[in-house]
Length: 287
Image (cartoon, rainbow, N blue to C red; front, side, top):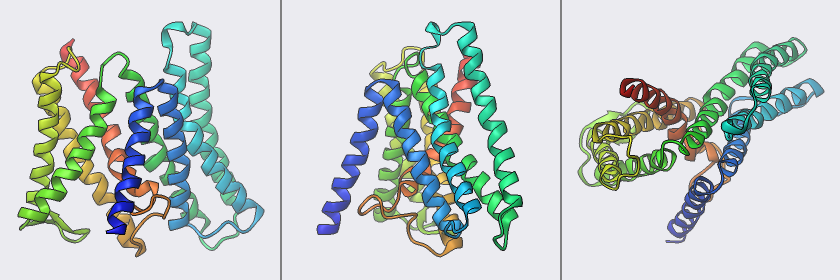
């Protein structure tokens, strides 16, 4: 009972943080994604890389964490695009290019001086942490900023992810019979997936009936529900693949009853890039 209460309270705090950040200024949400990115990359490093011992290894860790924190903040440059001059917009674009050019250049150069047993593998894992965690969270920030023009998209993205998880868990526990991906997640079933998909579709239908976004048709909302359900499941399975390969149960212990930040955002890391691609396709189809 105590564990359930702890898990529930920490889950409420996590949800409240995200909802409050979305309802507030876009800066709040972006800063939260920056914080999540740095913490999740730190958790990832602890899972797949040895502790930093030498000065070079500490420099590598600092490079990874600073890049992880900086990437989501780049999206702030597009928060008030109407107020940006052409010169300022060019500066923002240059800043983005600098990060993407400087990070691999610095990280790979540091690998030359890394005296660990597998410096090449360590460099690959560093780069993976940025692509797996930081870039998707940056895209989530961009979706949130775009929500000022396309109402409720960011909020609905999280609602669909959470409802998919809830629906899959409840349906899987009560009706689950056919294993979906037993190699990675023995408890996942096709019945659970169907339940999660139903909840996501229901969220899309409710969003349409409430006219949360006048530019979105029923088909567009339902399509968003399908994207959220499928990629949320894949995101969860991918983290299961990571943890099974490493022989660990959780990515960390930051959130009582839930594990680490990476355990909480695994679905988001797949949904955000997929949803942004979906929204771009919907936009161009509507033109």
